[in-house]
Image 1 (cartoon, one colour):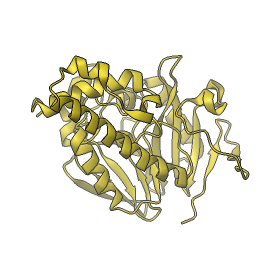
Image 2 (cartoon, one colour):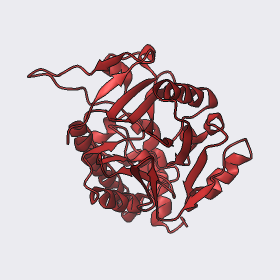
Image 3 (cartoon, one colour):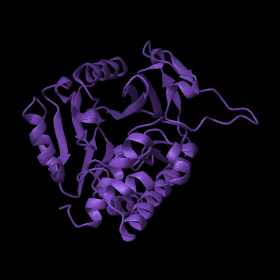
Image 4 (cartoon, one colour):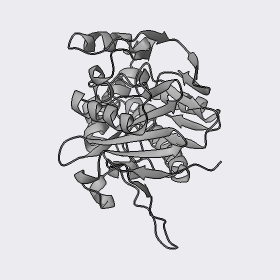
Length: 309
């Protein structure tokens, strides 16, 4: 499969990515500064295949910036957006970026992750858009609606097949993972899979509402689709080959974290002792490990103790 891989700047000048020469390696990181990127390089839009784009915007505190990614698909019958951004201003910029690429309206917004960094700006989408979410996400979205968040018009249990402007788009629930209601967007013709926060590119996982053991099962199910490109919810949208490598590295990191916490739990350590003693090997160096590691340990302890529903 030949994927078009280019960056469209905010001025919408089409730029091809630099080609690595022999001996060069892409810096494997989620930190923009480590790749020589600045705030001025974002937001950016990449065309992955004809009429299939990602929008990458920076988020996080000043000393820990990273990207939050949106997928959008342009068709003759409208635009489908998968995951918004974390505030109304950034989501408004996303809507503007889409309008500069196509005159087609945004007709569908899929809430693939119910976390605020993907939903807090949903009020900036057109009122006419149809919002779609997984049933398990309803409690979180209902709480957010009290502060102006959007409730879904359509609720998915396991799968929703759309035929939009002649393009096949599958919305899939493959099991609880990063949240209780993670939805994947599968484009079977292009073999592109938007993974939302089930996969982060070179970033330590966020476990605040996660189901650690089920997460790996969901990733196993995703692999059965045979994707050529795994698009992450956070971290850089790199080439298909690099993203495939990072997908399996991320999966290994989830397994290492689960195994280490399970070992400490089995040895009778308290959760606070586990926070002090846990060693995740090379994944201790990933972006977010210092902040997310302790959250993950506490969440996995709760899962092992049978405290999660």
